[in-house]
Image 1 (cartoon, rainbow over the protein chains, first blue to last red):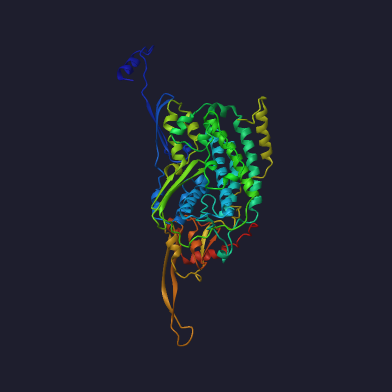
Image 2 (image 1 turned 180 degrees about the vertical axis):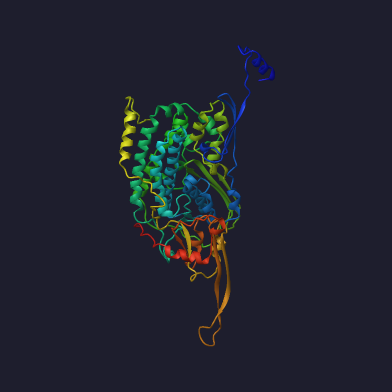
Length: 396
Length: 158
């Protein structure tokens, strides 16, 4: 609006005949915003209620893990990588260890692989339960949070029971699993296997998790307000999803049945019976629905793994000082957020020469400027929350 | 994509109210923290206890620590020979063993690499401080934690 227009308005209070033009307003969301899951800043150019352009500003949580890894040994890096995506810390450790084991030609024993698999699926359940509960919260429904986090706490307690850590287990070692947590004198003479009662409590816990999934479906998925805010909002078509490198549940919500658990062999998933849920429209509702179904599938995997848990050693024979032969390998895994990959380049030392981390949330977030263009301002939070990213995973 | 959603009006409300009713008569899962405390599992990584008698000042823990938060100093002492006429033996003595819990990331690598079983995890967690410098626990304070180390949990059948 120019000064002449203002003058015209001032002089003629009765009727304004000039056509009003509103310039784009820059709207800053964040970095401190409760619904951005961390420190994400969005610079949105809005015209009224319509978003013309969005620029996500990331990097507030950059901790430089790739560089930190270069000056540390492999056992030390395991303690770092669980902090990349802290909602599912255990799942980030496994692909790194698989990468190191592939370089060293070590195959972990069956029992170790099964324990890894059970805990990875538990991490998936705990991550998805956070999404299932916090997403309705962002849309204004605080009740589901209480129900979902109650069951998530049980899953975390079980992870703590085995590993000693709730969020940062640091449970994987090259060649198998070995808790750093010990208790009692002469603890090294005691095998740090699964504690008594773990398998039984796991079966009971996942039964309750499936129960809370039913409750969430009753509470949330039929809710008219929820349907209005998510159906047909934030649609990612398949071609755009593939072009931006969207992976994990976000990709499956668009209708692509692609799951690294089925295609790769970083953990023995091929012996298990589970489905890959996929959405149809790729909107916010489908992303919610896919994650809800994935909890059910993860519960199926855990049940099968617990019932067929093999006996045996927990760790393969590894040298006392781990030196990885020269070479490079890329191992990717289906993390709760999507594809998580580690590219380990070894020069033959005790630590990596270079460690490239491909984290899922970064690529999932990259679709945001395209996705938010032309949407309405109130839908920002609905779309942002449905992508389910963790800023630690974006910035690393 | 089959949903458990009924087309009959009012069913959703009934289901929600039924969930409320069920939850109403359940005992709360939260605890009233400072008055009640939950007992951590034996493997919980709360604080590191030190057995000074077992420590031989080998520095393995300080070297393997990912963020180098363990500070160790020691010196060699000459012990009298075990047999008369024998050689005097030197023994490493611990002067300083500090863990900076403000830096520690509770990974447990030090406990794992200790070759003489001098470090243990204790599930104690109530040692927050108002000042960051008070998070540096010295040898005496780390030894005090030793009494809180629990017995290892019984294991699942392998």
